[in-house]
Image (cartoon, rainbow over all chains, first blue to last red; front, top):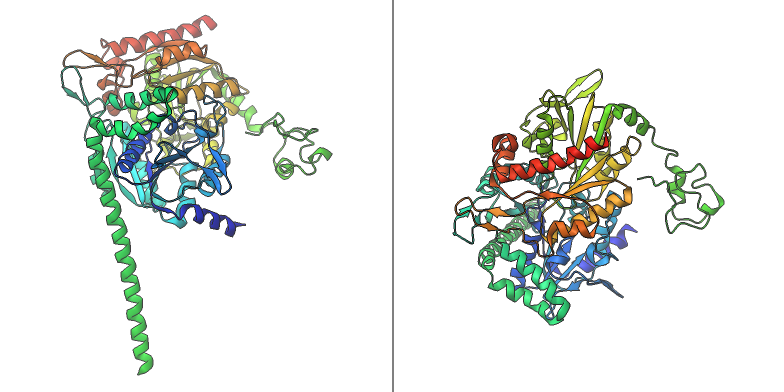
Length: 311
Length: 316
């Protein structure tokens, strides 16, 4: 049984080049909005991107992509993820698509949540993807332990940690960093979200949730600091508006990537995306180097043994 | 939760999973859950009775809930605690059941404190004579340690917070919860079923992304039959300290909290503006209400707290 399970898992996930998790110990710091923006930036660069939302009791991704009323379709090979544009550059899967009524609560304990996550990994036919970004709920509990466990065989690239600058949030995020260390999940870096708000009336920047805390924490833990994202109410408006437009015309879905690429945050986020891609590449290179070294060592050893035998 | 009722898709003559006949009746043959029903312990949890006795000296139990994270549940809980405790005759206990991300110790200025054990159980950490606090944050050897626990272990510690803590006589027990509708929420509802929950205060922020999760939480309260005292809108507008111009950072594109409260027929308690000093007070662990009594945010807080107080005085 377990063998067949891992087999199906590998068939659906083997077409995916990179898997990135978005984590935070604290809720409401912008995991889903960072996930969405990262996906939009990557898609804008021409990559094929998938989003998996494993926040089962509070899924936000469908709303952010303007896919509120969509349904998951069943194909012979498994569940078909919901595509947000006609070119099928961006697709996503969330429990939000499986609920009959979107206000229904999902009152589940751990084991049922774990089974659902397993099903998402086993049964969704993602096809060929350049990036799969996994959006998680806050905390260090069932969902997190399970996803790391289930992804062990496919070697995820690593985790992007999201925080806001204030101390209350940082203290929870430190726990998340320690969680990653404990379960040996590589950390790509830390993003500081909601750092500073520029008043639209007088251009004065106020640090509503203080500032600089994310960077200080990254240095303390010896992990990369990816960048700062300011508070920009226009993002909420872009994301919310497209949801309304969708009702009237279905072709406007394609606009989300375009509309986002015209916003101010896009400039900030392109830099962040580039940095994440770069960090990703570094990690992969390091892994390749270390693998090559291991192989080289083995060859050396074999040669030594061969020489000894010859003597 | 060991459900007492029959599941919807049960076989026709299902005796119910918590009855004596569970897993043994003839209708159970062929049911995929036969084994689970036959092996789980029967009857009500004996601990529920102990919790009921232990908490019989607690007059009111209030849950602070939200489907969404980071909307200010802990901040509100702490300020409510501080405000109530300004009256020396009121005894308050704060229970933090956010096991994986406890914020209460920091917000209430108790970081680094330890729990003491006595003959009558764990004694809570006191901010002042009439304000006791319990959180898993007090039990970690290192404050940065991650609590990597699955459901059953979290439920265990929550039960201990109710059963093994020497709360004494309390007028109010304020329970701060993690976001979501999962283990912690089901457990607290289950553990307090016998002794009764007075109600839940639901916290939200104005934008739709948050409201849609909060609607789920309200649906949850209805499902487990917890009465809702009302809903509070937090972070509802930001007044620039430089030019006094107001901006909606978390824009209420779907009508905001007030409309949701009307739609769902629950009470709207009020809204609290976004003030950078609230976050700062939380980081330093001091009472925002004592520190900046003249700020609009403080007035908004006090109005809401007064409303909650009124609700209980009327009841008494």
